[in-house]
Length: 130
Image 1 (tube, one colour):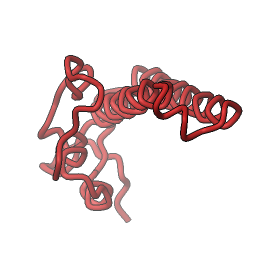
Image 2: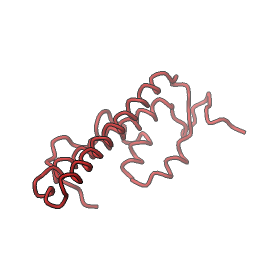
Image 3: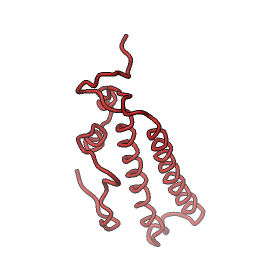
């Protein structure tokens, strides 16, 4: 039975800290995307659809989701800093479970990036159709 950690790096095996840092970047992107929802909900037009108490609960839920997402990213970031680069894992099976092609590319290392992948200069309401 082969361990998920190996001493010889094979083409499908990658450094665990590198993988975790890509997950951190994805979590930061999720937090950013969630934050972009807030202005549209706090807008007066959207407020007409929700009662004041309901609107407050939705806004608190969005804030909590952002905090939790960033908290998870920081937790993983801290753990990754303490793992030696020699710890390798095979991510092929896990990547097959990821349904979004952009996320799959980012997590596989093919889309290696630092910071947020979402453009910070886009106006609220901008979106990509697929």
